[in-house]
Length: 573
Image 1 (tube, one colour):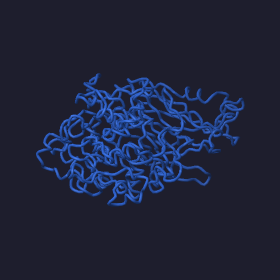
Image 2 (cartoon, rainbow, N blue to C red):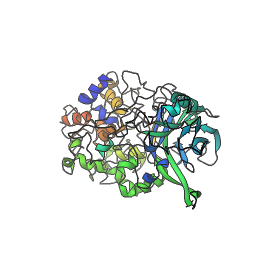
Image 3 (tube, helix red, strand yellow):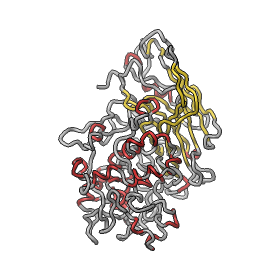
Image 4 (cartoon, helix red, strand yellow):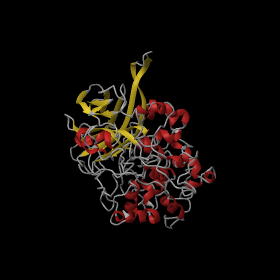
């Protein structure tokens, strides 16, 4: 990791490049007005990665219930009843809609309603169990693959868990007992966990004060818990119909999946006078999440509830949301000609306004649209004959070639979306093949190429910079920067090619908004001089940007479900 960090901060232009992600700042915790009033159904984060200790499987994690206080009794948080928690997988670009869906529904029972304690004398109040169903045909038919699944109780404290007057066990034992095997080969865990996301929430929402100016950064999710649904799924289960059991190479497009999660509730709740209620009506989606930060920071407050109501497939067809990605609000604060001076914390993050002397990616500008119809685009992804007007839809859509596709299509292994290695100064030329997670039939999803090799967490090259670190190696480190072959570069399995628990998505995404992906493919920063080095002051500034919080407050586990154990009510501050 040290060599990647040094490259990242001082030389690497590649680092930027790769993010190809774009979101913005914290993860989606309490991201929309309506869902903020319904925390049990609020999806906070989604992760999808090739399992490091079992690379023939994919691990998908969906977290719910933001900001759980470990000591939040007497009514501790737990999965809600009358909610459909679902994990969705799209694996076929030729067909809009999910191919594989997992549905979880929970029931809760008071074992001893005569006490106000959560746990007493071996019994638990609101003891929770679940049913897991799976659909392999887009939700037409469902099969129950696990019933009466165990959910560990909240970690109330040592007396409640370990003591003889409590459950007389350990919390690690409860977690292990809750890891079960489905009848169809999946491994499942549902239960409390330390919130795996890390970010200075206080700074970021204080008008972008990240890193904080003149004060200490603080992980706003430190010592807080979530409830997580974790699946470890054999890769063949997730493959599109007809795909070979062995990928053609590490960029095999048949191995690309899109992952998103949702929560739905019945349309109507009728309250009774005796404290009872009845839910009925059609199921309505109230929360969804794929890429981190989309609804929280990219989508403005007036459209957040609407965005939550859509599926990714409906979103792709809804052009009223597109301008939030073509011209994200955050880009206003990374431009000295606009409001850059008002957000000093972002002073290192500046967007290309005259890349290669002529291309302006500032808010409301044309980006690469000026090349429309130019013969130089022939055979590239920007050629109308290849992907239509998908990536160059019109004037004034500055980030249609980098930020918009990250959320809506993924990145193809296609010119110009290859590293600048081997391009000889022409960003439209063929370069170093990098990632392929292109799945263009849905909107916001985590897109993962399941053929990408795992970078082991104890590997000296492992980096929380994800694809940024992989780009650094691809552009600056031999042997990767000496050829244009398809190669497995460490950290190509990192965000935004899926999302690992360790990935510092906040930093990666802010660098991408500042033009990192553009620079990675050869659209250098404004202070680049023709025939000079692309490692300019502006590039170094972007690469050296830090948020102040760069890792989780607890180390992750090395085996499924990988999440750190939840904080107990007696150990948190």
